[in-house]
Length: 166
Image 1: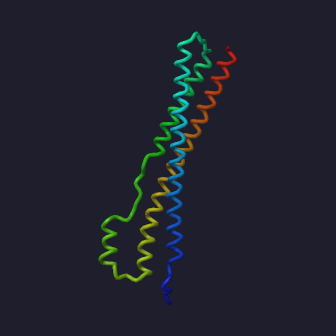
Image 2: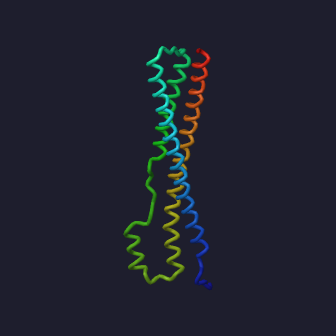
Image 3: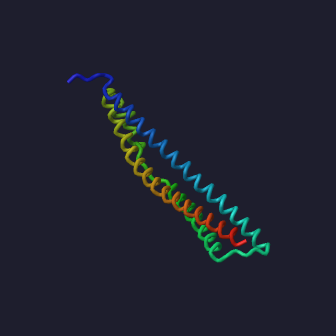
């Protein structure tokens, strides 16, 4: 078998690109998680300010509107909690220090093909765990988004009920 000196370069570039896409996916998920936290916190603050204002006035809110507002508050808190759960860091495999030292000592004289193979193997282990971590975060984030949408719907219902009652 003739071994091309460039053998494996296409594979290692593909694997490296795939790893980078998983890191990018994690960054995207983290941004969406921050969006859930920010939006929930802002709306909770507005609801709190609105409630404080309303309590200082002679404002009557129907039981249904109050129930919708409380449900919206609970939903926003739950969405923020789910987002925090989604942001939970997972442990992904990377080449440990001992493996890296072996590359610099025992395997320093390996040919390029074997070196690329060893590096690609280490990258694949990282990709496998990153994919699992990202998939778990994505599922949790989807639930946080659904709950937040439900909370916004309850908030809208409560506002409509409050305005109609006036």
